[in-house]
Each structure stands twice: as C-alpha cells, then as structure tokens.
Image (spheres, rainbow, N blue to C red):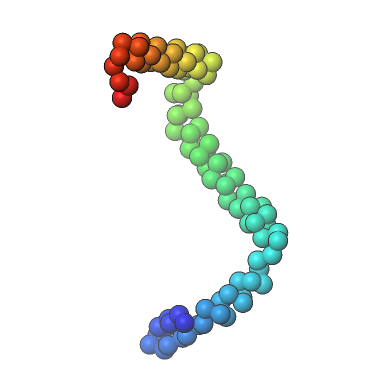
Length: 100
C-alpha cells in the first residue's frame, strides 16, 4: 500500500489499483504509441537547439574555413594515427616486450 498525506488527511492507494489502472493503457502497441507521442518533444528540442546555434553565431564560427575540417580529412587523420599507433605497438611486441 502507498500512503499519501494530503492536508493531514490520509489517502491510501493500493498497488493493485495502480496496476489495474496502468494495465488499461498497456497493450501490444504501447511502445509504438509512446515513441510517436515523444517525437514532437524531441523535434521541439532539436528546433530549439538549432535556433540557439544560429542565433548565437556558433554555426558561423564552426563553418569558418580556417577552423572547419572536412569529415573525410578528419577520418584520414584518425586512420593514419591509428595505423601509426598499431605499428608502434606491433614493433614493441616483436622486440619481446609485453604489450600493456
């Protein structure tokens, strides 16, 4: 049982009555309805974030040529660093040192 004190009056709600009430809304399509009903909230949040990004000049700052790095270039840099890291670790292990 769950007890709630409202204006010094005791209200008691049994867990069974809560479960019966909730079961009326839970069916095989519950998850899909939940996702569909949350979409407007997530879309509003995305719109607010985009508005903030444009209104504050963050987008302009990110797209300046001197600061921007194309994704393909960034990917090549990361691949190069990973290959370099792997070759150093392989050469260490071939010298008889344990890899950490």
